[in-house]
Amino acid sequence: MADDKKKSLHVKTGDRVIVTAGKDKGKIGNVKKTNPKDSTVIVEGANMVTKAQKPQPMAGIQGGLIKLEAPLDSSKVMVVCPACEKPTRIKHAVVDGKKVRVCKKCGEQLDV
Image 1 (cartoon, rainbow, N blue to C red):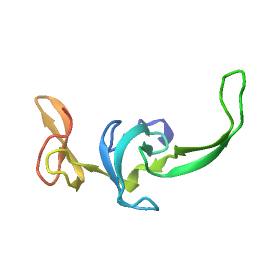
Image 2 (image 1 turned 90 degrees about the vertical axis):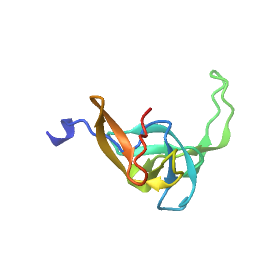
Image 3 (image 1 turned 90 degrees about the horizontal axis):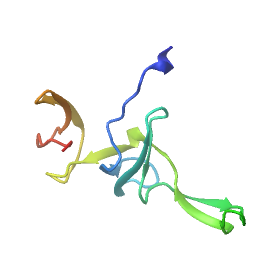
């Protein structure tokens, strides 16, 4: 029954994040995709893997080795505040009846 609950992440698609752990520690990129079910995110330019692609002539796909971003656990990334340009944790606050994300360091609102 615990799996039926809707999970949420501290990052959203389009957020600028910094990788805090792993082989790409310190890299900054934008979140391309989130997967709340697995608590994973795909960050541009981080966690690059090489995949062997079979050719598919009907679809016009050429075979060979392709590089693509693999999912990264959401706990390994921190949001970079657009106002103070620092990696930060976020807190939730209610502004004008809406729940928004706020920077812990400078107090600036992250959701526009």
